[in-house]
Image 1 (cartoon, rainbow, N blue to C red):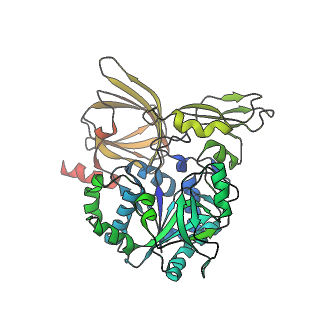
Image 2: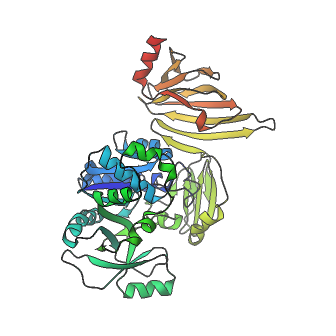
Image 3: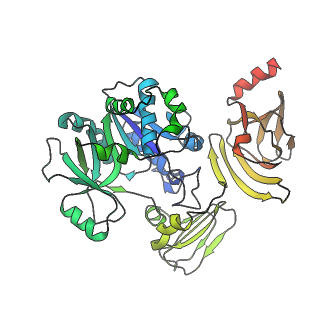
Length: 457
């Protein structure tokens, strides 16, 4: 059985800590068993390792999240990369092509799809494993996992079974689905043994390959990548699940929680105060998460969420926090904080002048032994001022060592790379006509390969 974790998200529901490159699953606001800060994706991957399932698991994500995943889980984690952000059907179709044509998975193999960020206990993953036997016993084309509801919720979709009679392995035949109902509808659905739809389902790989063939889509991963922009941006639920008649659901009665809003996330945090600042004892129910270098003080304010990052500052009543996605629906800005495979950076300042020239200032941190790729830019120059640590840099095939206090100028068109000999931090000031990611012309990713350019030139 193969597991595929879907990692997506636009980053609006947990703004300002989340953004288009750092979605909610990457926020290190939970606590690991060792007492260290832990993100949702790190928690889930740790649970998969503890249950012995990590070796047969993959992550499917867009290009913008690859380096974040590598930063948090390591470079060895198998990642299936979408060429561009679509919806869940294109993502799962590409995943099927990858498993078949690249990983060599048999069409008879069971594949389970699940979100990358469920907040669950280990029994959740044991139930995921049961889906393989459920499919075998039931003969179904699709096997879903449904959470036994604790209450009538309007936040989740529901899976409605045909009856309360379970099959041999505890599964139920599926009648139909209901999107987020109102309170009265939710109570009526629960009376009919409906289950919360937690986004987990399984199928035999050959089942989806057949669907791709009927649509005239290639089964080869590279070929499907080339045609990816032609695929309809539609969810797997609408394109496949709701059109399938032979479908069953496996109930899960254990702990499950969707940490999709500030009020639900803060309920699972071990501390009501993260980062610089003070929260007075009479600020009952208030939670402060501060990623800025300036302190925030909260006095006598109850049931608030105060979150601050380089992307912005949020002050909201806990009960009203789910409204943020609607409030910010027309708000767009470049991410001001990003994690990368080599470390992270914060945007300190950004100015665009009337004549069109732009200046962007970043504080960049590179972990010891990591490097930024050998690259050049056509539309900007950079000045690096080293704050701490030691590093090796390559400028147009020439190697130099730098330390705190050194300043390096990198004109337009200059090939450059940096390797952190220790943890290193520097201020980067970019000046140019167009400060965009597309102007990063990468020559090679690995530091060891830069030597080839030295000898060739």
